[in-house]
Amino acid sequence: MLSRRFLLSALAIAASLTASAAAVAAEKVTIMVGGYEKQIYLPAKLTERLGYFKDEGLDVELLNQPAGVDAELQMLAGAVDGVVGFYDHCVDLQTKGKFVQSIVQFSQAPGEVILVSTKHPQLKSMADMKGKTVGVTGLGSSTNFLTLALAARANVPVGDFTTLPVGAGTTFIAAMQQDKIQAGMTTEPTISRMVKTGEAKVLVDMRTVEKTKAALGGTYPAASLYMDAAWINSHKETAQKLANAFVKTMKYINTHTGAEIADKMPPEFYVGDKEGYIKALDDGKAMFTPDGVMPAGGPETVLAVLSGFSKNMKGKTVDLSKTYTSEFVKRAK
Image (cartoon, rainbow, N blue to C red; front, top):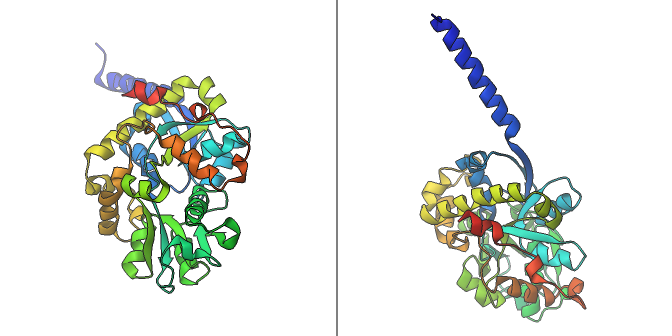
């Protein structure tokens, strides 16, 4: 008869071999996030924290990059497999001969605002930005795209004001405190931090679909998971697993309160104000899609917005059907 010690030893070895096999089987995917502490990109970290990547047999490494444009460059260089960033990069890149697709659409509104320093009460609209310096996360970033678009809609030409890359969070706040920028585009939790201290107020709000339509003329799909089209075509099973994980997260966001979601996030994301973080989530989580599907008419709005100021668009034809795919998220549902 086998001894109890022998049986326990055999079970331990079997468990170890099973764990090792699972570890080997897990597919490694590297995704760069354009600032994963930003609430607009919350689905990336939340999916990791909920264990949905592991549930799909994926070993996903999330890398942090403050500006989406830099994350995009890392993907094009082959340093990462995908980017959590704004969909508008997929449209912009096609004009440069690069085919990139959003495979999961996280949001249907940018979740961004133009903040204006309370030191400059004369700045009451985008039309007042002539001669001013407006902060963006990076040149060529989506915050830069949107800032130029809002100025163009207010009849302020690109050369009449300056956009300055200042990042987000503490670097954005410092730039405004030091008057290096008089206004700037940023997201939560930076918005709440500056409004709470009275150092800034919201000038243009794009945190809801309704306010985005008022500011930009239509629904503006923003945060997404986008990847090189060639990578997607050669890794369809992995792309499907990523979509499965993220669609579960979108459903989670849609069915849970800001407090419940916040409890899943790293405490440092609250920046010392969990109550403010929760309020910002409750006020803004309607910007997220419930299922990862591209909103109808959204790509057309993005193309129209970019065409209003971008030199890259002049004389170019963009095939919007090649800038996103809903095949994976629809299968995940």
